[in-house]
Amino acid sequence: MMWPGEATFSRLHGALPFGGIGPLVALVMIVALRLTLPYSRLHLIRWPFRLLVAHLLLAVLTSVATPDSGFQRFTELGALLLILVCLGRGGFVLVIDSLLSSRLARPIPKIFRDILEGLVYVAAVLAVLRHAGAELDALLTTSALLTAVVGLSLQDTLGNLFAGLSIQAQNPFEVGDWIQYNEDPSMVGRVVEINWRATRVITLDKVEIVIPNGPLAKAPIRNFTKPTPVSRRAFDVVVPREVSPHRVRAAIESGLHETDGILSEPPPDVLTREFTEVGMRYRVRYFIDDFRERERTDGLARERVWYALRRAGIEIAVPVRDVAMHPDDDNQRKREAREALAQRLQALQRVDICRALPEGQQQQLAEAAEIRPYAPGELIIRQGDEGDELFIVLRGHVVITVEEDRHTPRGDSTEIARLGPGSFFGEMSLMTGAPRAANVRTLDDTELLVVGKTALAPILDSSPELAERISESLAARQEQLDSASSKTAAAKVKPGVDGERSGQLLVKIREFFSLTGRQ
Image 1 (tube, one colour):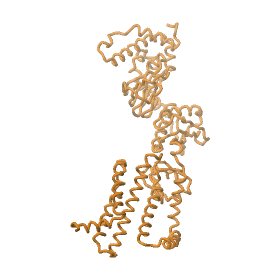
Image 2 (cartoon, one colour; image 1 turned 135 degrees about the vertical axis):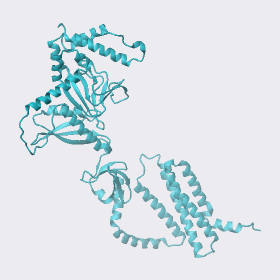
Image 3 (cartoon, one colour; image 1 turned 180 degrees about the vertical axis):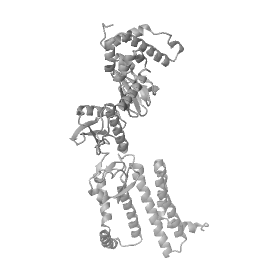
Image 4 (cartoon, helix red, strand yellow; image 1 turned 60 degrees about the vertical axis):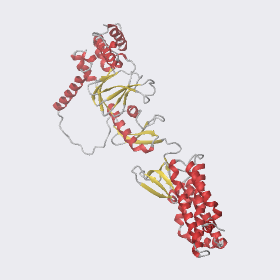
């Protein structure tokens, strides 16, 4: 005696391929994928799951269809195809994305994935056709003729396919590389995908370019990411012929030192290229390791070169097309010179050690001082370096930092102060030649008034007694700094100047300026 629904269950069981083992294997495979795939790859389970559900629906339709009818035959073959594709797709993802992905040095190229997956689907279709009773030999013979016809009509597509395989085999570039695929320098981009037909590239303008694999395989390709991400950049600058090449090279190389994005090894260099009508042409060369930021780095390098040449008093030569003659205005030039001198003198009078000088010597020092421009983020002085210059901020702002390891000025640092217009730094190095006690870097476009030892030496040489007054001012300045940096009230400086410190500084000043034995 049969229990109710037994006949229906028997028909459903008979409609399932492989006696129901196929859906069970597919379900186990989906659960295994859910447990082993990383979170970012879980979307790969969707298609095997959908195929399994569709297979079960067709199996139900097969079980309720009229036996031996055309509809039953159709749903039976459809259910078989769906479960085979489900098993093939799930097995492919399990092997490639779950088991092999963690063991391979780099992911399998998409074009190879597509071909392997396509072969799996072809095998599933052939198995269904064989189950349906089709003669595969005759089918393959017919398909050979069809393949010849299709091949002639799809020459370009097939050419792109085999070109893509060639690209993957030779591996001239891979996803993530920056390449130039045309003589046009603007045709540069980052590879985001290599598929069976074309390669997709994203340019810096965020424009996607699809390049067929056929033309790409024949074109010369420049890879800026291999064998290493280091690549060289260059631009030209022209300066007047009167300026010596050694002076130009020294100025430019110092300007590029420690510029963001520019490598210190290999170091930047400057080559003398040619003589032109307007001056000497130099090629500025440097290396970068982040090709994506190349345009920003190029712009920053040009800015630093401009500032460096400006500080060195070197003009950038430009072609002159029109020459206009104007009478000299001596009064105008003299007035501008007086205003510039008054500005420098006013800045010097903010500095204690300069106020200690008589008015005549202040005027002499202002005439010898020079104004230097600096770019944002540029290192002015480095902790531990030798120096003999005092800096006064005329415009902009600087930040003062201290490093425990002075050989790594870009490492971990402690900010101790920020200075704006009217502030000054470097007085100890100017007067005693002491090594720099901190790093000083610009925060924005900055202009500094610089007083060097060569400007102060003639004044002290003619009036060596001024050294004592300067040492007292310098000692008072150091005590003020010590008091400001102290964290306890007990460490605050008492009124008056520390005579012992002043005497020690006086000895150092006389030694540094060769005033020993002179009063």
